[in-house]
Image (tube, rainbow, N blue to C red; front, top):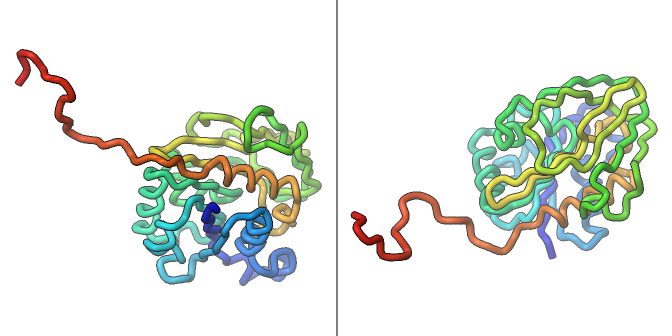
Length: 241
C-alpha cells in the first residue's frame, strides 16, 4: 500500500467562509479522503504544524507527496524545502497542484520563475488530453470540462516538460500547459493546474481520477540512487595512473 502525504498551507480555509463551506475539512482533507477511498494510506500535513508537518519521519515514510499552496509560499522554511527536494531526488513522487506552481519546492526543482498569466472571472475551462496513451489519463475521455475556474495563461515559465498530458483552453481565449511531468533524480514530478480554492474542483470525480492516477504513476522505483563522485575503474586500465 502506498503511503501518501497531502500537504496544504491551510490558510484560505481559516480566512474565507466560502472556502470552508466547499472544503470543511480543508483542501488537504478532501484530497486525502478520496485517496483513502481508492485504497491508499493517506495522511495530511499543514504549514502551521511543527516542521510544517514534514518531519524526517513523515518524509521518510512518504512514497508520494501532494502539495497545495497559495498565500504563504514565503513562510515555508528553506530547510524543509531542501529536505523535500532531497527526498524527490532519492525517489519520492511529488504532485504539485494549482497555485503550487509558485511554491519554493516547485521553483527549486524547475530552476525557473514558474510565473504565468492569471484571472479570476468564473470562466469555463476545458482540459484537453494531449497524451491519450499516458497512465495519468486512464479512465478520462478526450477532455475534462470545468464550469468555473481561475484562468492560468501562457507563457508559463517552466522548463520544457518531459511529457505534456493536458492543455487547457479558457473561455476568455487563453491556453495553458495544465499537466506536465518531469523526472528529477530518482523521483517523478507532476504539475496539475486546476484547483482554485473558491471552486469545488477537487470534488469533481474526473479531477480526482487524474490525481489518483498521478499518485500511482509517481510512486518510487525500487532501486538505490546512483553513486556519484570519483569512481574506481571496474577494469584494469593499462598504462593508466
